[in-house]
Structure formats: C-alpha cells, structure tokens
Image 1 (cartoon, rainbow, N blue to C red):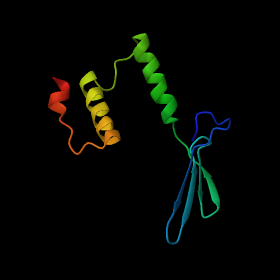
Image 2: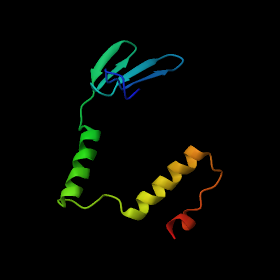
Image 3: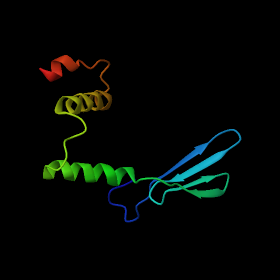
Image 4: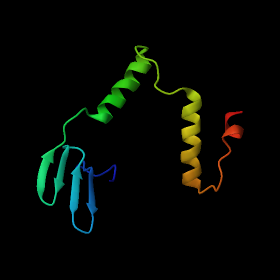
Length: 93
C-alpha cells in the first residue's frame, strides 16, 4: 500500500495446499476457494479511533498506560533497527 495511491486497498491472500483465501479488509469480505462471505462484527479500526478521540476529549481513560505504550514503542524500534536485545528497564528509567 502506498500513501500516494488513489485507491485504498487492504487485501490479504493466503494459499495453502488445498485451499486459497482472499480477505478484503476494507469491504469486510472473505473469499474461500471462490465463494465469498461477508464478515460480520464491529469495525475494529473505527472502534480504536473512536476510543482515541474519546480519550483526547476526556470521556474515556486509555486502555493502556504510558509505560505500556513506551514498552511497545521500544519493541517496535528494536525490530526496525534490528537490535538483538531490548532493555526495557533502561528505556523506562
């Protein structure tokens, strides 16, 4: 996915020995061996963004605290930089 691409596409393809799956996350459709099925349930991204807005408005408390957020960012940074170890105690001090 490119940010400068005009058409939004969120698809994933999974090929197994005897099955083929395609998931269209934007339109919430699962195709298995050619048969399509609409995925029911809440829109997770919309719920997450609504929660963030409510936290910013002071309506809700964050699901995670700042320490958990820093830990998550440290792990992501370690993965991106290719670090072999991540010392969370050093980061949180």
